[in-house]
Amino acid sequence: MSKRKKEPLVKSFGYAFEGIFACVKKERNMKIHCCAAILVVLAGIFFGISAAEWCLCLTLFGLVMALEMVNTAVEAVVDLVTEDRNPLAKLAKDAAAGAVLIAAIMAAIVGCMIFLPRVLSLV
Image 1 (tube, rainbow, N blue to C red):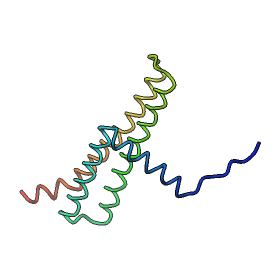
Image 2 (cartoon, helix red, strand yellow; image 1 turned 45 degrees about the vertical axis):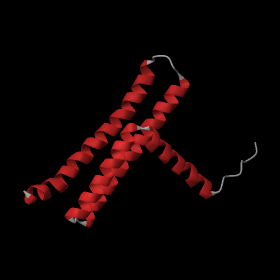
Image 3 (cartoon, rainbow, N blue to C red; image 1 turned 30 degrees about the horizontal axis):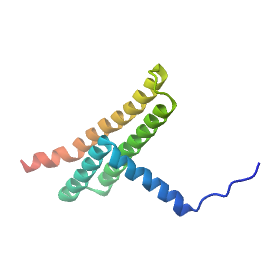
Image 4 (spheres, one colour; image 1 turned 90 degrees about the vertical axis):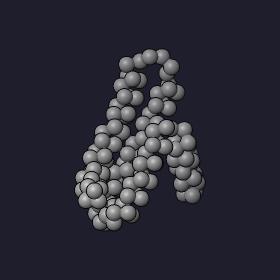
């Protein structure tokens, strides 16, 4: 068996960016996550959050977006493999969607802990 030559690293990054852009373009929820991330960044700048708070925010919305992309990949593979209703296909899709939901809920809770006291102090 011959070893296939690996593609240049730049090409690998290109494929990764293609995946990101395709997901943002195709997936409604990814667009929502991107808008939320932009709002978090703007709120972070406005309220002058600490470096630790920035780390939390960036990590959490990065996690949510990454899981959304994994969810999209799982759905695409399941759809590629079968068009039939199959309990295992449903489980795969539902579990991937559930992972995104859990991360998004946790991110929202942390966001409230960071931003709610600042918003309330304005009122």
